[in-house]
Structures are given as C-alpha cells and as structure tokens.
Image (cartoon, rainbow, N blue to C red; front, side, top):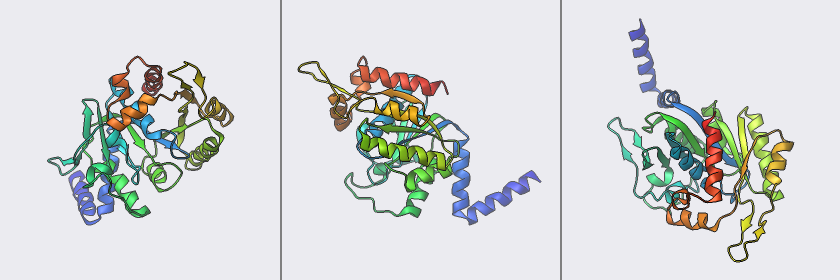
Length: 279
C-alpha cells in the first residue's frame, strides 16, 4: 500500500509542476537546520554586505552555509563574493550553487543571466516561482544555515519567503538615521503581520573612525537602531561601524574578514554569528 501511495503522489507531481516544485521545496527545507531572511526597510543600509559577512563569519565557525539572493532586480552577492560564470547543473538536473569555500555557497539570478548588467523585468508570479526554485531546484546538500538576502521593503520577495518557509526568522538591518528607522518599523510590523519571528536587529554604518584625525564621526547618527529595537520589543544584535575598506573589498570581490581578520568590524560579525550558532 505504501508503494502504491508513493506512485500516486509521483504521478500527481508529474501532472502538476507546481505541486512537484512545492514537494521539492519542502524536501529541501527538511535538510536545512536554520533559515534566516535578512531584510531592510529601505535600500542602501548595507543589507547585502551584512548577509555576505554573516555567511562568512558562520562558515569560519564551522557551519555549512547557503546564501540565496532573492533581490532579483539588484543581485549583488556574486560580485561581493567574486563569482564568475553561470551556475552548473548536477546529474540530477538541479542547479549547483557557486562555492566560495568548502562551507559557503550561494545562488543568485545574476549567475543565471548572460550579462551582469542585464535588467530583470519580472512581475510577482514569476518572482514567486524563481524564489521557490532557488530552494527546491538547487543542490543544497544539507545546510546548517540558509541566509536569504531580500530586497528592501515589504513586497513580493519577503512575502514569498514568509509563505514558503514558515520557520524562517528575520534579521533586520538599518542605519541610525530616522528615515531608515521609520522604514524598519514597517519591516517589524510586516513580520508581526505574517507571523514571522524576528531574531534581531543590526545597526549598520554606526559611526566612522576618521583615518586622518582618529576622531569618531557619526555619519548617520548612532544608537537609533538599539533604541528602536528596545521600543518595539526586538533583540538588538549589535552595531557595525562604517569602514571604507568594506566598500573597496565589496567592489573587488575580496572578503573584508579574510583581508582584515583583526578589525573591529570583523569581531562584531563574528560575535553576531556566534549568537546565530547558539540558536
């Protein structure tokens, strides 16, 4: 009877591609221990660099990490990791994620297009399908962490993740300026509306140490992220200072933590990663 039941289910999936994809998604998620979506209320706050650096910090602590770039209209993860070329297919006809090292790999729409400057012009239903394919039709090989880099705001992409991965937790990135914090409060309320647990909030670009006079300058203010987290009952994960070398490393596809392992920024990322490892 069990064999007959499986045969019926297989026939249904072959007849219904949507059901087959949903089955593949759920089977893949069973082999991933922890799922996090990295969100921001507005663009330009360093969400992608935070995603990449958290992934690297986790990998350095021995975790098997997969990065999924669902910022479909502005995918930047391949450039930050120095990836070249398109994704390969496995023997099972699944996409093989690009490897940064033995513990860290990533998938992005940019690694599927002919040119890095090609525009992605898709509506919601197509984006919904692609995001599910990035989970169910990728050879993820079992992971400790899946980090999903979402575009800013509360639109199709984070909603699809919330509906597809019920156990996903949110990490919200902001700067300290009020215009960013106002949008972060919307992200927090989005998570509450869709019943997504918020793991915590990170304040990025929090202060800058002048290389000439060694004075600390609050480019975007400081402390606002922590105050917002406290006011809205969200855990505060840490403040990451602005470092101009992060910009140059990202542009060159060289990892900041590899090049500057003893920097204050690296230590903060490692501390936040340790909190994730304790989940």
